Length: 112
Image (cartoon, rainbow, N blue to C red):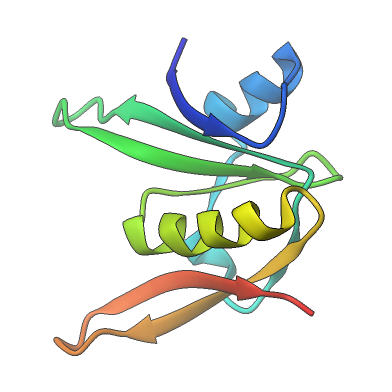
């Protein structure tokens, strides 16, 4: 089982599987410009099989049981700010930007 850092609510085994192990989970960066409705979310630690590096992963479950995830600290921070304010009653849009160094990044903003 993964080391759970934080979660939106108590999750059943199916939700835990979808959020931590499902091969159908898709990266947030593949969905820039899309709106994601939140049913549940989970922040957990995972180990990269190639490098052995441990990193945090944010996974979001939609009402349709789709899962989107991100290892971006910026994305995770911005998402957690919204989750603290709105709990599970919100939707977000995946947005991209460019850092001062010219590097592309992905984060999220409240969808209204």
